[in-house]
Picture 1 (cartoon, rainbow, N blue to C red):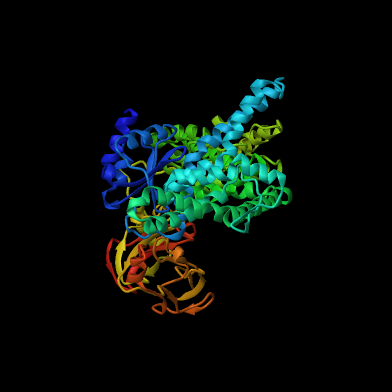
Picture 2: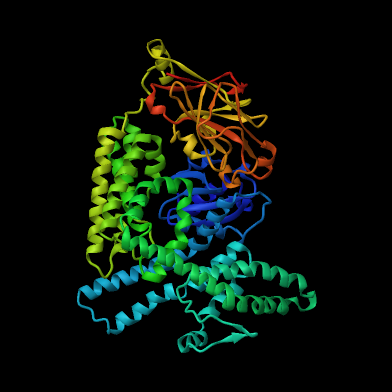
Length: 616
């Protein structure tokens, strides 16, 4: 299947070209939003040859293609996709919206940053091989690479404008004003400069990130104002002129300096961590990168990464840890391919393991890692240990790129040992993950072709030999299989086994006698512990953490004891749904590993006090 055929197959399963409101691509996946999500068929997308996986994360649909993703994205755009945001009227959570903005702003400029960094890496190698820095080849290639960083404000102006919905060329004009040679000369001279009697801060905006994003954010409002006040007869020239005359001075006087100070603050924090606890961030990134990717939270670090690149020429926040984590994904998958006797899993794990080592982790993550909880823990352990070594040795990444063995040149810089330590960190992570998976993490899945009894039947037969604990429903409503919850953390049983319930009245009652282990600050999650030791998590809604506690009324506090049937919490179901959130309630046994089995009752109506889960 060629790129165009793959693009057409994808469009057939997402409601066609007219259903797409936004389309961008990162290194391995298409990121899409739609007018009508009911037309999107994830199960069918996953069956398309050439699609490695399809999921919904942080309010955005992600279709995993691999390194050919840019070609497929271009084919879809060539079929008539109009650029620019479309307002569907659907409410989106603040965190989801912020992640979506970061992705749309920074993803388009990553190729330029990658190219600039790789050219610099090539120049470093050339110097080590004897090239003089005064040679014309070095000088020309050097300023070509520098252009990718220096003119970053203009590139970000265009991508920001496309995402936020204003004229990208007016935005580029503002970015150009910040970099204009005349302004640069004023900065160098250091003499006071004013406009309309207001002082202009003399700051060098070359390679800056945050000032131009703030400028474009302001422009979205000013441009609408200019459109409203400009008479139709002269709107053609009055609207853009008025926009620039308002935005540019405000940026030079207020927003530019503010963004510069924010960028300096980010750089200062990064510098402090690198100097005093260099091991901390790579360790955490190496350990928790799979969870960050699963939840889409890795996009929140993009402003920090870009600021670090433009300030220091490298970053140590995500690169070292994500490199080790990706190698650990490959290590776990290869271990499974060697150990398993299941032919289908062996084939999947072997191919996914190789691609993960090269930096494309989605097949390993969705095909192997998150299907087996202990394997995920093994990957996190290996990533943490390897990341710790990378942090101790001060490993940095000199340019953006999908971290993997194929892209190891992005760790080549003036310090020749940087790439050596990066490879050693990968080796440490690989060995630790492989060993942990081999001895702890992998349990052979049942062969579906064998005529064996189901896991549930076997567990029930053993029920007479073990203690049976019945968990009653804390909710009035309708039971739903946990695999149908639109959150991979619950659907893949990463936190433990359980069931979900659609509430009809917005009330949560105690399912057993016990105590309140914790009520989250945002009140949407309550953790309980029964007198028999069962740890139960009741999560009200999907992404409702973004409501910051609004519409939730708890009637208990941390440490309170309760009796079965006591009212624990109420929530305004209608208000939450009107705010754009699902109110399905996953009920999870978080200490599942302490028991032989956790069995969910069949789907259907349920009332408080009726049997919901059986624990053996």
